[in-house]
Length: 279
Ligand code: DHB
Ligand code: FE
Image (cartoon, rainbow, N blue to C red; front, side):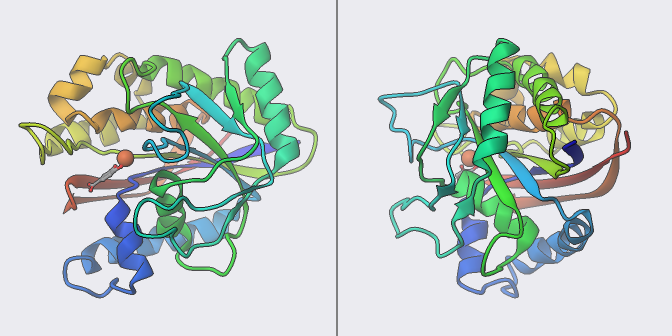
């Protein structure tokens, strides 16, 4: 049977992808960040997932603001990087696992999570940057990738609690798939940041550290955070962290293999956690 073996929480700041693409890892601004990513890259090699379910948000790239779905599951064979204004990133296409996607889609919908499905879509920095963070620059990504998009850009977003519960249903879906597959779940975005308005540039390290401290052992406490809590304490884009809660919902008894926090990176606090499933 398929099994969830690991979870990753990872910021998806676009400039990290741009820095990697331009070979700027040793640049004084980026070096501490990429040095901090090195142990995670070693760890994921040992985890060696066959499939990554990559929870991210589309930033009005594949889906314009004319059509916003709360949850979208990719059910295709291949997803190309989106052109976000400076040409598509020269990273490998994400190769899907259409059969596992179809199974997950059915299981989630029968569990009453109303997923939209995407047979075809491009993928933006929300998906490609965490792959770069974890896998560096291979000719092809070392695993299949199933994209799961969450609306965090347009109110009303789903609650953190809804995302946590969807993560639990995701686990049930994976565990009922008959093929032996090692599956990792990535939750991306965050940590605290605000890109717009009067409070643009807002960071709150205390909030971020509290989130990192509680995600493993007390995620239920974090599921109580409301939209206003995120907005006030973590900035308008801090709500991306509900996608980390979805990842956490897919794990039963994680142990923390690695944690890294670096601030600031672009306008954002860059966080990374690597969990191993112990059950
Ligand atoms: C930045 C962070 C994001 O999560 C994002 O989607 C876009 C930009 C930033 O810090 O620059
Ligand atoms: Fe983002």
